[in-house]
Image (cartoon, rainbow, N blue to C red):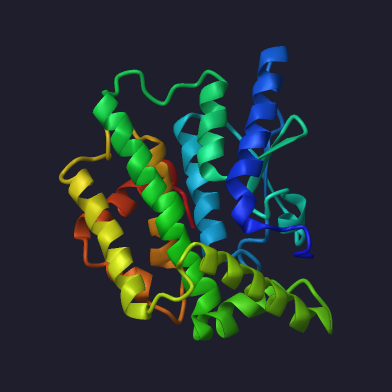
Amino acid sequence: MSWSNQNPSNEPSESSHLVDSLVKTLKNADADWKNVCMVMPEPKTQSLIYEYAEHLAIRSLLKIVDLPITARHYPNAVDMSPTGHVPFLLINEKIVAGYSNIVEFIELKGIKLSTTRTPSENTDIVALSSLIDEDLRHLEMYVTWIDDETYHKVTKPRTASVYTFPLDSIVPRIRRNTMRQYLVSRQYAKLTEKQVGEKAEAICLALSQRLGSRKYFVGETASELDAVVFGHLFTILTTELPCLILVNAIKKYPTLIDFVARIEEELFPNRQ
């Protein structure tokens, strides 16, 4: 798992370029959804919390729109992504990485998640999806890479698991430095634990207020917002980490706990 080809700060522009390429593919071919696979690290031994959260968000979204996929686990999955962003979808030899880009690709394919939304509802979906896909994901990265106890007890062993000496010691340090620089550029690296908790609670408050007593965030059926919220909140609630900042923030909002349980039962009734 080499990090020499990664530049996290370039994720959006590179991913947008890939989506543009896929638009051309869709215009020039019958883009049947065949043999689509999601490529990711091994969930139980290699995936980090924000990677697994995105994996679950994507799986939930594809269940909502009834698009089948197969999962393939590779120890060098990060190297296989041109943005260093995992998981990603491999579609007709094209790569789509990043939750928002996958949502866009599905819509380009002609699949509409809803035809009855109001402009206000669409605005809410975009804003709250960004709150999860950007803000909460960066808080997950903070816990993963900046919190020392989490890094040494969870992140480092998972990152090192596919390497032998001396790479099992060198690669985690390189990756931590890379991610620290990325989080510095996004103004997350120097946050205190208190500030991380406050940001997490603010996100949960916004979600709880929008959800209210509804079954879903918008409309009568699950949307891309429900999928990404479920993916991240479920992962935080069910992943054992030394740092409890994020899980404690979610637990202050029973509405969100109920939402997670409801979506799990609806989309993954036989989940072990």
